[in-house]
Length: 248
Image 1 (cartoon, one colour):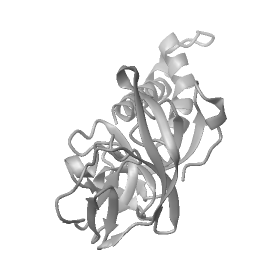
Image 2: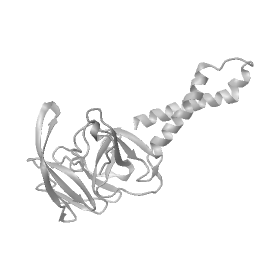
Image 3: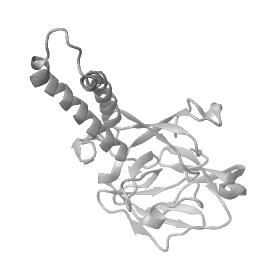
Image 4: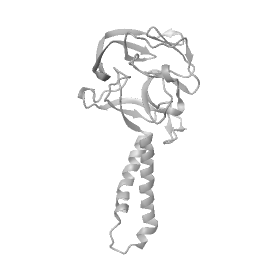
């Protein structure tokens, strides 16, 4: 969000300088006089910034994964692309929808503004849509009273912060028509009873179920906070094999 504000400020500044030159300054220069450096740079940068701003606001936006909360689907250090129009076209910065296109579906990996602090972007998986009743008991996710199908895949180890080796089990979980991998450890995070997802909100969880602060901790994701649907890994400095992978 802060980068979007910065882009808007630079876009307005360069556009204003260019406009002032067209309306006033150019008429006062003698024939053959060079353009002021500030005007020259503004004319060069304004079209580029405008194109980048429009692409990032309405088409795709890049993000970097900062943590392991979405392992094994996404790893810390993955650079991903997010489809900005999947959930409707939105007014930049204000994030109000002005053209309805679609809504998050169960199983989507989505980016949103963190509800307790909207200046921070989070990425999780949609597990509950408006009207769903969600519970997490004994390492099983329940939606509307039905436990999701999970199948053991293999043992999974990874290095966490502080060079601590974490040992987990990888399962394949079916969420609607979407199949994806999740990680489960010995310690459980549970929801006491069921919670119902209110209208205009979504319940989000990380695929690394025991190492994710998500809707089980801070609550629901409002429609207003949606950014877009993650769909592609375009770079990882530590693991070139992840480049080009789609996000399921």
